[in-house]
Each structure stands twice: as structure tokens, then as C-alpha cells.
Length: 449
View (cartoon, rainbow, N blue to C red):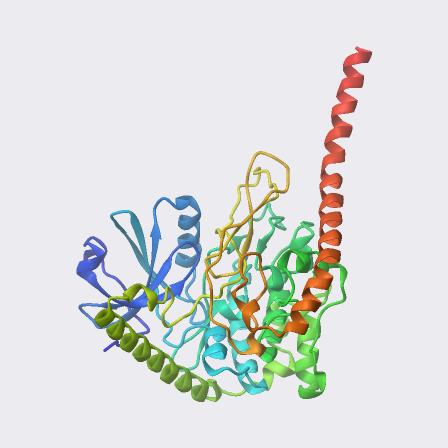
């Protein structure tokens, strides 16, 4: 049985032992940035913890940056970091365990969105966490329901600092494209430099996600969404009549396209929608129902595994994500990006599919925009209201779509492709032409000389 302690720490003696001497791994919780996350128990205290196991052949420097961001944070609204271990080819990162999983997990388990009271409480906690980070010049850069964890008391905490960034005094705004496409602020996509206000846009999208089950543009290709977000008006509620004027206003001020006109976390904590938020107890019903459903799912999987063992077909029933199912959507490799001031920023997008949906701009010496994809894994169909983002390779869901919708998708695919190719060509030419001009000028100077 797990215990809970707010002042838990790993003592130096424990940190010098092998991790299996200190912890018992119970089960896999899902996928985080870089590695798999497991539920574990601290043997001597019974404290429940989360352990992220990261292969050391991953980008170790990026992992160290993530740990550095977590080490510097001490807030009840940010997931705590306790220590790290090396074991064989893995780095074990020991963190606070939030027993209810993420907000997106809760919505999928319960097959329903959240109501206004629940959303207000979660947003208040997240804003308090962002206020803490932003006051220390840290940007989370991947705020979404999947990165907001709930503990069993109904308190929300910001998690997954795989893409968090530090603003230095000499770097007023960052200009790396990083985050999750559907939640990404326009200024991040446009690469014009951004600061903590980018998290506020992502929070507004997250509010819509909690209210409607998915972010705007989730049913279109993420690369197309990247082109639409900076050019289209800010998104809003599909059915505004279902929501209060205060909630609609809160979302609208978060989703102001000019970041200079966007409120800060401090400002939003004074917004009437947040000031009227109730206590965390309004989330207890959702928390308890989710815990019950988690236990049911775990029991069903255990039963299927027992039956499969008897039939000799174990591999057919093992789910790669147990209590916290990973989203089979776009995932572009994550990192804790804290670039030195003189680091060149280039635009190579690496797309892989481990279920987190996060986008980063890799650093490289070339200037071309190259796109790489990796095959995705099949997934089960879910409630239509919680449609997962459509990405290349993620075709299993097509089996469950009506024929008329399949025909409609097919009819628009070619025109979408033409538009996207043209936009990519235009962006490529915009970056290519200055290089050609500079080369021509050098040739002319050499000729004149």
C-alpha cells in the first residue's frame, strides 16, 4: 500500500544504492518525454513515486536539462523531483506520483468532458504553477491536458518538463519551434521570438480541450494546423451557449494573437472566472470515478493476461500503456531547450510517434526544413468526442468512420496536399533566397576585385 508524504526526500544513503534496492517497480504508467514512466514504492517508507526510465543512448544533455529545470522547482503546483540513478543502460528519474493520472486520462476513462466548476479549479492550480515558473523566467512550452496531473486530493500539478525552457537575461525571447502543434502559440510557429506568454495561449487551448474533449484543429493533419494557427482568427467554443460569459471571456483573453496584449498568469489569477472557482473538492467525484475505472481496467488486463498465459498467446493482450494510455498522435522529439546565447537555431522537424504529441525544432548545421516520420502503433477506437489527432501512419481509426465521411476525407485530400506543398515551397523559398542573394553579392565582389 502506498503512503503519501508532502515532505518526502531521498537521503544520501539511498541515492548511493542501486535503484532496485531502494524501490519496487509496480506497473507501467505510460510514456513521458524520452522514456517510460513507472509506478514505484520506496521500500523503507512505503512512499508512492513515479520513476521515469530513460535509455542513456538518448540525448543525455537534453535529459540533464530536464532534470535541472525540475530540480530548481519547489511548488505544490509543479511535480516534484527527488533524485536520479544510473542502472545499466538506463537513467532512473524519481519524481512525485500523482495517483489520478493526467486530465486527458480522466476524460478518456470517464468518456466525458469536464464541467465549468471542474475546469475552473484545474485552471486556477495550473495558473498558480505557471505564475511560479514565469516568475523564475521558466517557460513550460507544452501546457496541455496530458501534462496536467491530478493527485487523489484533486490538486492539479504541471508535469513533463521535457520541453521546458529557461529565459536568460540576455535572451529576452526564445525562437525555437517547440511544443505540441495543436496547443502551440502563433508566435512560436512563426519563429518571431516568444516568452512566457506562449504558455498562456496553450492554457487557453487547454481550457477548450477540457470543455470539448479535444483541442481546435485536432481532426486535421498537424502540419496543416501549423499553417492555420497563425493565419486564422483565434479559436473559440463550438457551442458558446453551453458556457458562461465569464468562461468564454477567460478563453478569449488567453487566445489573443498578439502576445504583448495577452495577460500574464498573475493577471489571469485575478480574472472573475478564476476568482469564483470553488475548492478542489469539486474534483473528488471525478477523481474517485477515475481511480475506480483504473482499477477495473487493471483487473481486466490481469484477467486477460492470465487467460492468454493458459492459451500461450501472451503477446496479444499486453498493452504498452497500462493505467495511463498514451495518445497515438503526433510526437516530435522533445528536449529541455536551454540554448546558449550564440547557438544557431535551424528548422529540422523530427517526427516520431511515442504518444505524447510534442514538437521540437532540432538543432543542426544545415538550414533546410526536413521532415521525418516513424510508424505509429494501432490503437482502439474511442468515443467520437475524444477523437485523437490525425497523423500520418495513424490509420487504424479509419475502420470506424462511416463511408460518407471517408469519401469526404478523400475528396479534400488532394486539394489540402496542394495547399500544404505550396506553403512549404513558399517558406523554403523565403529561407533560400537570402542565401542565394548573399552568394551572388560575394561573387560580384570577387569579380570587381
